[in-house]
Image 1 (cartoon, rainbow, N blue to C red):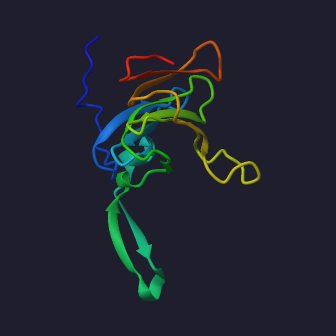
Image 2 (cartoon, helix red, strand yellow):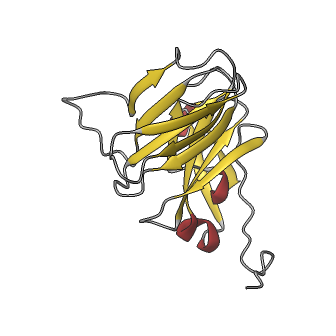
Length: 162
């Protein structure tokens, strides 16, 4: 196959510095997650990026605030904060659309409940768990098991797999 990347490309600004990782949701291919050097993950809905022009954001209310026009592609549908350094890899769960796993230069692995599917009674944060004792160096890769729904494989600069 010959893929024409320029014909389908859309510019997305992560607002978090360098984009270090990208994942496309397998069950919602219009949803992408970007991992940035600021340690955050931003989720974007590509359907809105292509069709939106400008959006007004009001800061501080009508009397004190000011209106700023920004391109809609700079506004993520969800912002996930949990890593203290850049996000090196991330992956959506192959079966459960609302699950995302990420790894970082901070030597941790995080599991997320995305798309606002977490309930107020169970958790006030989309971060389901963060594991920082797995490796002694940067965690450079993560992947969900295709056979066990809750298993994750990780790779690290410490030359180990977990």
